[in-house]
Image (cartoon, rainbow, N blue to C red; front, side, top):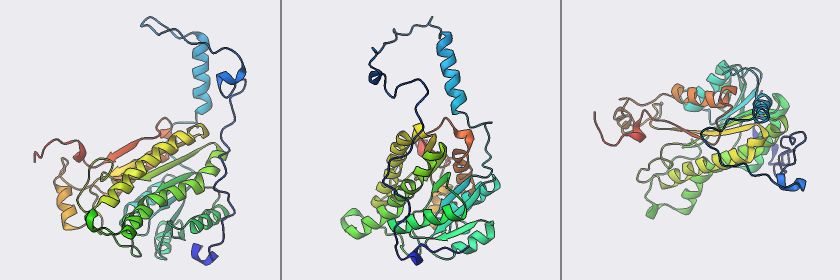
Length: 325
């Protein structure tokens, strides 16, 4: 099925992306906040090493765990609709993630800015969409099209970023960086994650289950390189967005995390990047499949007690104090 968000003429999405999430219904018999019940709020005495939980407390905890359980702890995503953005390159991270989620049973949609996405979709046996994810109206049209063709998205991987054919990467010191170039990096690497998360989190909240995994990077949250200030700022922003979303959506059964790759070997890797990978403690750059494995875990029911976290995939490079190879 061919879909191009631009062909909709920028018509507004049928979804109201500004509405508050439906949220999980309050627990039976419990007020939203203790003070709202009018009853005095009891403060527990300080815990001591000899304290043991009462039977009532144990029953409460066990009931909460049972209510939160998605079923067996599994990596499988059978029947769940997953969207992976930025999957246009056959040797890129997005493509590897889409393949991994497909192999775990998900019904996968992939999107990029060019029609080559349909070649990737055909190779993977998934559904491809064309959209500019920095354009609010195109993101809304994409959300409607996926809902019509596959159903509501339950797993979202915000991988779009870095350079694209339509918007090449700009490497300049801050003193030489234009405001338009700055905005382009922020839009490509941060605004895309915001717009897609906003477009799809409402339906996840209504279902009471969802996974959002954002692709950050070690540049920004962990370290930085000269001439990449805008990229580093955007990726640090992805981590902040991840943590804020995690706290906003946790009561709706949605876990939000991010993965921060270091030097990953792809077809677009430069000689400098390859040398950086060879200099890591593991002694080589990572692969898209290794990043995909980390992302797939965070997309799965097995990650049910992990939210608001950043998982670094960089061969140990960010924790090394000094070069030792």
